[in-house]
Image 1 (cartoon, rainbow, N blue to C red):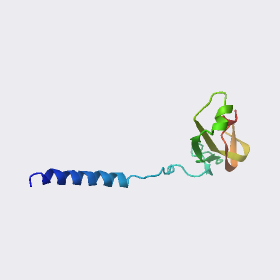
Image 2 (spheres, one colour):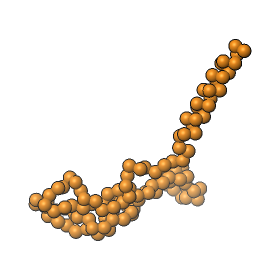
Image 3 (tube, helix red, strand yellow):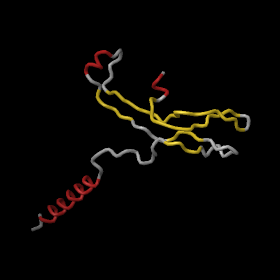
Image 4 (cartoon, rainbow, N blue to C red):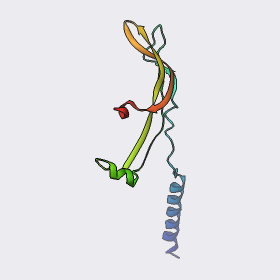
Length: 117
């Protein structure tokens, strides 16, 4: 009968660990801190003319590099990544306090500038 207490404690501890593991999300959840790509007023420039800029998140993903692609790479890499950034479709220049700035008028997700170079 004295050996039942440690066994009961072990069962309780294992059930606690299973509960913690079960409550943890099993899939990767998207970053909820970042809104979708939209046109938003830039709060750093609260001047007489509102300045609008494209802000927000687009998709990014990583996946194993296909074998055929890997054979053609100068430096083979096991992981290939894709990303798109929130960029302006249209904009016009405006002068505010002697500084020329771009005021965006519409946004979309497109290839990131640093990927184009």
